[in-house]
Length: 325
Figure 1 (cartoon, helix red, strand yellow):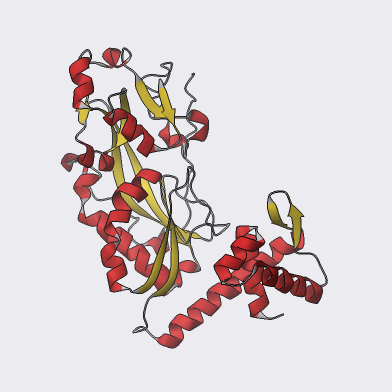
Figure 2 (cartoon, rainbow, N blue to C red):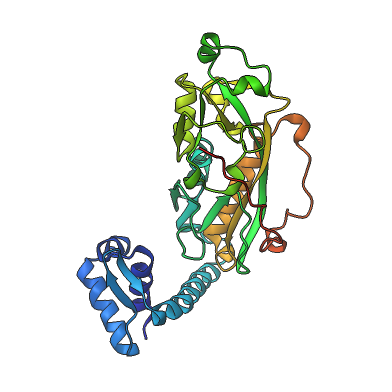
């Protein structure tokens, strides 16, 4: 078994399509098919089933996948060590983040990272779900839920708050909002329940459990646009608000505190390119605490500074109640 064959196997397992795997490897899709068939003949077993959803790993393929990823990571580490500490940071790092954080905060702040490491490429995933580290959909993720897997490393990135906001023009045209009872008389903008990224986004359940959403979206940026457009009021993360001139409503009452975790696979954490991006994300978040928490709420959290000590979570978030529609 040659490592080169395993590269084709890994990319087909990740992308599930011959064309996509070929594009990733810089070869024709027929080359991917031929190399995978060659590997299957050498092992004497089928590694994939061809389905309408693409190539799916068989039981034998799933067992090989775990070993092949370990080999891939070890080769990357050997490459790093051979070049020494002075070696350049190079390669691709894929970061999975919530849509609002990735688009509004992270993407505009990547310039200095790329200038410092000209051979580093970033792939930014802003999916309507959190990417899977286990399936290697991303090398690093920013998530609301601390990973449970024993092979994942997680560190607290920052606490942050959500608040209730409206556009100034909307407030000029509608009744004032002084109490929670007033909120019930306004159009509410929020998430589609069944497409929530995390149960922690059920932030209105304790206050408005039965109020229907007039406008719902799977992504927070669409909610920002609807609120800016004066279609109603809604809950937004604090870091999204400064650029849009929105007005905070019931600031003493309507505040929800959550935590962003930075996570990666334990093997990938040792890779120079992953560590460079990991450290950079932490630095830029720490440099602008006012975007995430109001001044009175910025108390340091103990016990989560060293990601090597923060592997896996000890408790899952409490199950949230679903809001009736």
